Image (tube, rainbow, N blue to C red; front, side, top):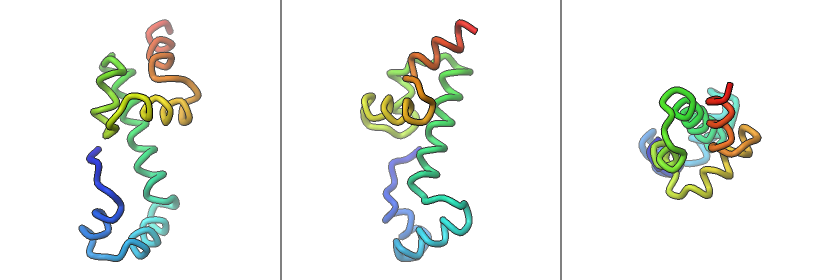
Length: 92
């Protein structure tokens, strides 16, 4: 959930950026950016579902710097805003 860049991750793995991306794709079957986004969204959904944390607090906990970009990514992933997602779960 840290905001490490791919360049920093590649450096930590002692590889070039292109080698890091290629090896990551081979291991996980998707590009690193997509994998990271998927993990962040899974964590956000978990927090909203199980801990009933306000959406304005979740974005920071999953590594986003602003609520707007978090909400946009969440909606793209789940088809509804974080608030709609949480409200639907609470009403079910």
